[in-house]
Length: 171
Image 1 (cartoon, rainbow, N blue to C red):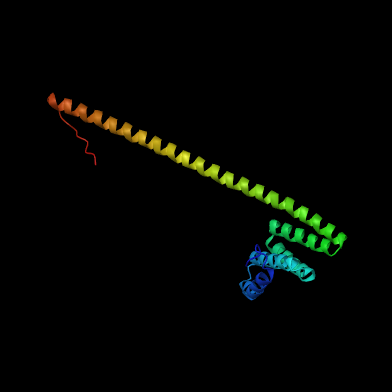
Image 2 (tube, rainbow, N blue to C red; image 1 turned 90 degrees about the vertical axis):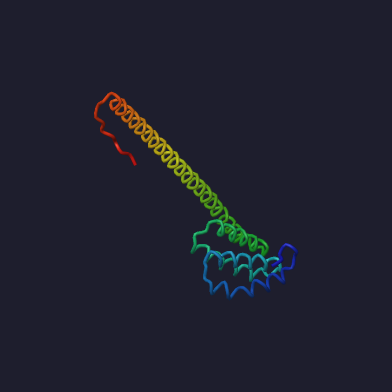
């Protein structure tokens, strides 16, 4: 839909046409975003009361998925809707909720970053350990080959001098 170009009526028709599919699909995360988008579009058309209902529905779905960023967005928009209706007490209440969820969303992002960096660090550490083990194994193979080579040389010298030979067969 084309919210950017200002065709909010057209966008609303497209969104409402998608509603049945969204409900049937029953993905709580997608439903939270769907209702948030639907409400935002209705606000642009000055359908404030309908938008408020959709913001509440968005919040219900976002709470089920514990998506702090979606909750923050919904509460922010809900505060703006109540501000537009001159209900400043509710606008203030929902702006506080927005701030609370905005902080939680920031914490979520920080925790995700820490988890991602920890995973990358642990992977790199394991790769380095494997490389070191492979290097150690290669050194042991070379030492073994060198010892085998020295033993063969020794037995060849012994044979040249008329002695017995105990050849090692290597495969």
